Amino acid sequence: MKTTISCFYRNPVKFRMPTAENLVPIRLDIEIEGQRYKDALTWNPSDPDSEVVVFAKRTAKDLKLPPVFVTQIAQSIQDMYSGEKIVPIKLDLRVNHTLVKDQFLWDSNNFESDPKEFARLFCKDTGIEDPEVGPAIAFAIREQLNEIAIQSVVSARESRMSKKGR
Image 1 (cartoon, rainbow, N blue to C red):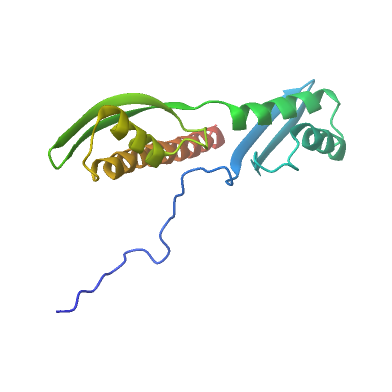
Image 2: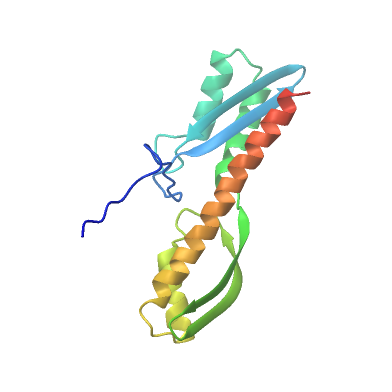
């Protein structure tokens, strides 16, 4: 018997959890002394050539913005990519004969946080020996982080749409 797998999407949307190599979306909207700077860009915080202050100075110079904008642009970028985004994660799983119930806070902006490593340490610390539990925990964490990321995108779109309607 032949099994056929059909795909409903020609180009499925791919979602990748943030890593150190990923670009961070930055949205700037700064108004000082009656002048406004508004921009959306992506930033690679792990690139050694990405110097926030140099970028801010170059931007202010290119757009003929007053020098006071340099500090604001640099600070805004710094805050957006280095700020913590703490989200609650809740585990409520049954894997074989093991029941896992726990909740904790996760910094989704910490690109070094790894659900797989967290799950491995969780199992080690709690004495769980079933080899299927760790991957199930990591999957549950990724699933919740994915849902939170999708909700953030939807929320940002709705916010922009409501501002356009004003």
